Length: 101
Image (cartoon, rainbow, N blue to C red):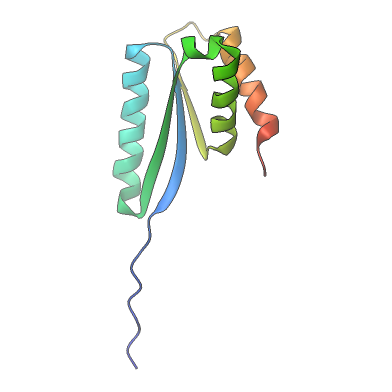
């Protein structure tokens, strides 16, 4: 009896990237490309991008919080001195309680 070949179905990774500016977005994109290269064809990515200034608007921050809660991975990319803007902290704090696990 021969084994049946079952096609491999890629695993989907929900990835959220929040970025400060174009330079920070490029850096986060390099991380995303590295992950795609290293994980290979067994994984696909659903990518959500949020620029920091969008998180200033409460309604958008709530949508972004839901995205972060549903994400398998969140990347926060900044050029700052290590301090995140208040809107980004609010976004992260809003998303954590929404996680279902």
